[in-house]
Image 1 (cartoon, rainbow, N blue to C red):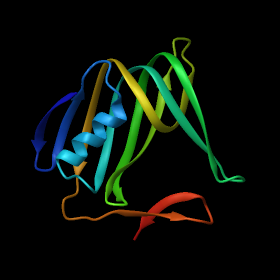
Image 2 (cartoon, one colour):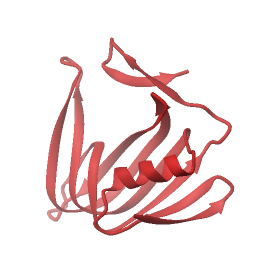
Image 3 (cartoon, rainbow, N blue to C red):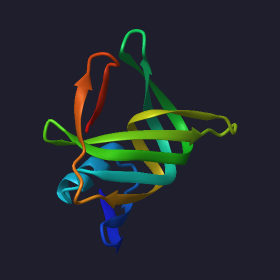
Length: 142
């Protein structure tokens, strides 16, 4: 599903295998390495991605799937914990063949080519999440 190396204390370079679902692989990596607070960033390519956009008026997410070859121009996010599970909050910008871009909260993505991530673990930190009724978001529990 993935390969990795620890390049510094608590900092990993992660390569997700071709045709794998990126968020599942990243979640598994964090769970297996007990990373419950940290950050992630990366680049790569996908053949399909489902993005989410929160409508603040309804407090509901609108999902849209893009099924085409796209470059991950930017991926950034944070790692926390909610209900005793790894919680990934990842945003992505995807470049299309016509040089336009789509962006949003990443729900799923299928790798088609490569996916190179840097995962930084904050082992002494705890970042919990809880649902906030006012915004409809799972916010940090600080």
